[in-house]
Length: 69
Image 1 (cartoon, helix red, strand yellow):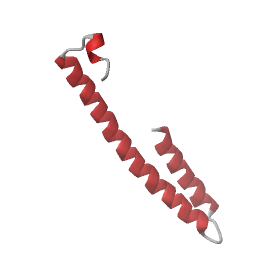
Image 2 (spheres, rainbow, N blue to C red):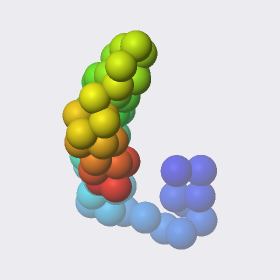
Image 3 (cartoon, one colour):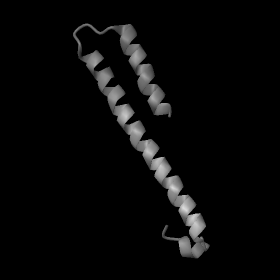
Image 4 (cartoon, rainbow, N blue to C red):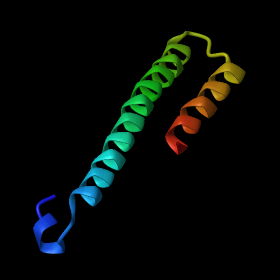
């Protein structure tokens, strides 16, 4: 943004860049919510006195899946 005059971007290019940034930010916010939810579920599973290993591993896969996205 601070170099838009230096590179000579026109209004159409600025609009395209702005839209790309907005789309990206929207996706990031959604992923942050998903990551928080999945991490909380994993923490709940791990806080139990007897951890269900299969459930915990499945939840780890969920957390890692969100992280990959």
